[in-house]
Image 1 (cartoon, rainbow, N blue to C red):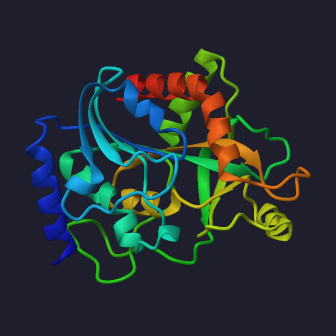
Image 2 (image 1 turned 90 degrees about the vertical axis):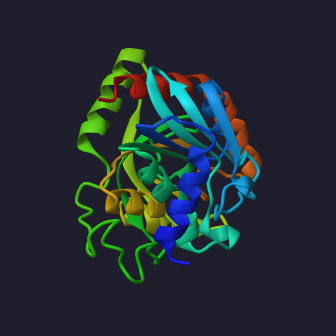
Image 3 (image 1 turned 30 degrees about the horizontal axis):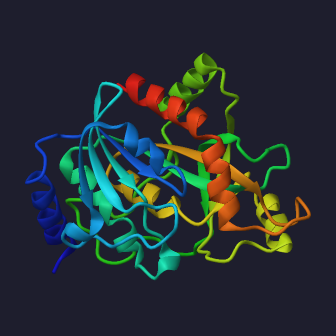
Length: 273
């Protein structure tokens, strides 16, 4: 079955569950899915119920779509995402982004848990992603291009919307949240990076590193959606501090910054035009 037909079937199924036409899409990373609990008049649809949707297998990812109202906007949230390291093809990883577009989403906020490479960062910092580096060495647009989705060679000179970045900075100032700003590097995982790899990543110009986000942003831009990216710095990358890395630490840190994260995203959604 062609991708466009799968999208139509998924979209049709979701529309049997809700009449909401969402404007803003939210992709919630490890430990950050609590934001979906803030959505009012919510319709929750497990991924396993939606035709052609993958299923999230990672701790900290609840695995459902949540559609409803947040800060005066109609939103659709992925409470948990999919990753290449789970064994999914990148077209499966990014499939929900295509469905969001088909449902009416114009702006998408992509969040993730990331390791801090910039040594001025600390665990618990929130970083606005100003650009990314794709070191996954893979691209979800490889293969035949469907003109209905977007152009064959999409421009990525503004992968992350300058307008939304400025809005996020203004919200951060208003809420007195000291937001960092920097470049995110995407790797495949699932291993954390070695200290030598972290040195390379820093030399290549990244401030934070993770195992997601890049494929979804590529597809969102291919679909002409405005993108805002926010990383929660959950730990310092390998070799910066003398301790091993673990997913438990990621979840623990996101729990500690929940209120700051929630207030930031709620306010950004409210002020999006």
